[in-house]
Length: 114
Length: 111
Image (cartoon, rainbow over all chains, first blue to last red; front, side):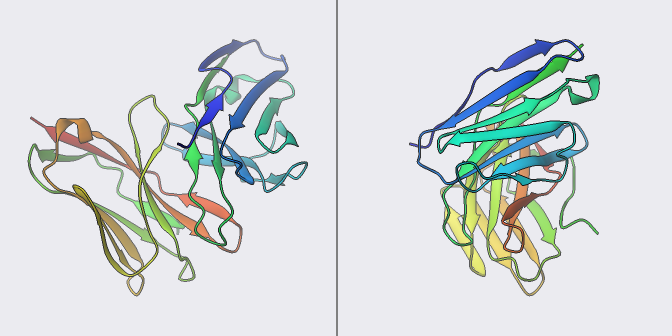
């Protein structure tokens, strides 16, 4: 069964703090993704990775960085949290199939930056 | 023009009726389409994927793809209150390797 887990369901941080969001998948998927979801704006892709140590910018990478040191783990880093980064953060993974990749989502982390 | 468009709704149907959710897309080269269901406060959950023109059925759900007209739809038969959720349509972009999501349609099934 597909399993994507995220380190926290809820997180409260202060402005300026460095924030780490962790995502782990156990399906040996090559591809991993970080999204944020905000009311009225839908799902927006922050960063994604096709392989270990590889990363690609998504649509809204500003203010974020990522790390993928192991295949199963993809971390999202907020270098200096700001209030406009309050959001629901969703991690997803998929197996490379040459155009039929199905993404499976983790439970999400709801981040509040005060 | 957005790459994937959905009517945000809400779409309200009575229990037991057929709910029809529609999605249009702009990339003619897209080959893969997905429907996700998202309950309030939860993450998206895959319901169905469809790659070929025509219909694909899975239980009470039927996905329909018409590549010539560039639309994909999801039919939910015998709608239940538990089907009340936001339904996200997504298209795989071969150019970018990304999944492009629509804004989602909120479905309300009234008992």
